Image 1 (tube, rainbow, N blue to C red):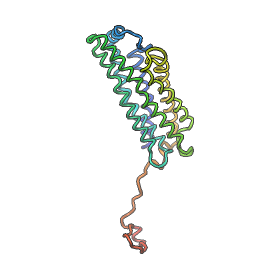
Image 2 (cartoon, rainbow, N blue to C red):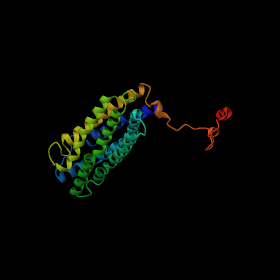
Image 3 (cartoon, one colour):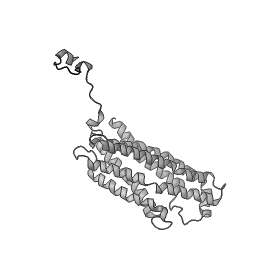
Image 4 (cartoon, rainbow, N blue to C red):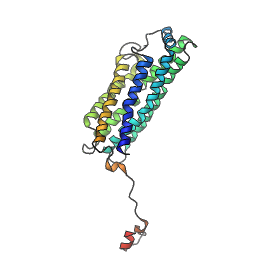
Length: 263
């Protein structure tokens, strides 16, 4: 993979964040978020009054999510440069990335359905779909936390002279993984900072994740700029092909002729 391709993949990260932010801020306008303390009637009224803007916002956000895949793949490729032997850590990153993208895409379905049928179903049904969306949005944070942690561990395990990503970024990533993980506790709280509209469950993980993405993009971009986005040993790890003429029959001890070697 050449540098231009890696840079193009890295550029999808900031683009994803921008499109997602437009969908969230201009589409749903969920600042503040309709939280667990709101009644079913109040939530249903929001979906009826803002049906079109909600649908536009959800559509923009679900369109933004697939851009996470090429961005994460580029990050895994760059971090792979310092991994010796079989790229287990890089493979783990890609598997977790796939899981995150799948979760991130499907979680908008309950919200979209609630807006699609707004005013046609009972307030309780709309409210249930609304809260199901929030549970899927926040409760499924563990794959994201593990993905970031695996990336950090891969950097720290790699020899300093072979790893393109700095070690301070690994420690920052570990801190980010620990910061977003407590969001999975939302099922135990309906009020307070760990409710799905709370600071610790929603705003801190959401904002810090997108900030981490931008920092990761800058760090990875600098690695590409240094001229070694892919380590030379990682470009082609195919086994050396030995000419058939050079193979010695089993049990034969006579030396190969010069012509045979050259052939």
